[in-house]
Structures are given as structure tokens and as C-alpha cells.
Image (cartoon, rainbow, N blue to C red):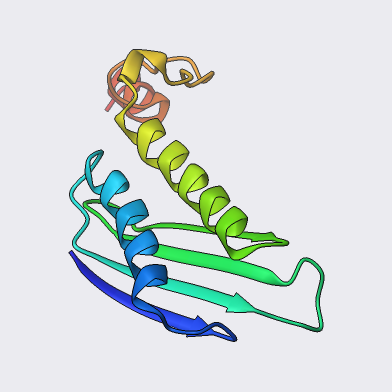
Length: 120
């Protein structure tokens, strides 16, 4: 997995990257992640000050999540939780998903059946 980190308003320390990388690795156990983009920033003028945004390139549509909190660790955990929920929902068996409420149509459309019955 290729990971691109954007750390804004925080010290880019190896310990911080290790925590972020470990969190992404847990998501990699659910689905193959080709690449990830992680934005972790501290915005002093807003409350809560820490924001985490992650985009994962996975088979099918990419998965994205964002969260804000008063500490970077709490924002990071919220993002991981939201990503995990999205990935687990994709893996849910088809019968667990809600069924469509529209009734099944018989073969052919009404127009085709009406044209076949009309004298020619």
C-alpha cells in the first residue's frame, strides 16, 4: 500500500507516522488497499481543532471519511471507525442488504407487448 501523508500544523515525527500506518494496516486486513491519502491537520482558529481526512483506493469505488475532534488521536480513531464501517458494509452478504421496493417486470416492456398484439 502506498501512503501519502499531509500533516499540517503538527510535527512530522516517526512515532506519529507509525500510529497512522498501524491504523491503515488494520483496514488492509478487510480489503486490499492500493493506496491511501491521509490529511491530518490542526486548525487553531476552529473548534474542535484537529481534523483527519482519509481517502482509500480500493477495488470498486474509493472510500473516504473525515472527522474532527479535540485531539488528533480521537479524530484519527473516528476516521478509522467510519472507514471500517464502510468497508464492512461492502462485504455484507447480499441478502442482508435492503431489497428494492419496485415490483419485478415481466419479460419485455408494455410497448413491445402492445405492438405484438396489434393487427399488422
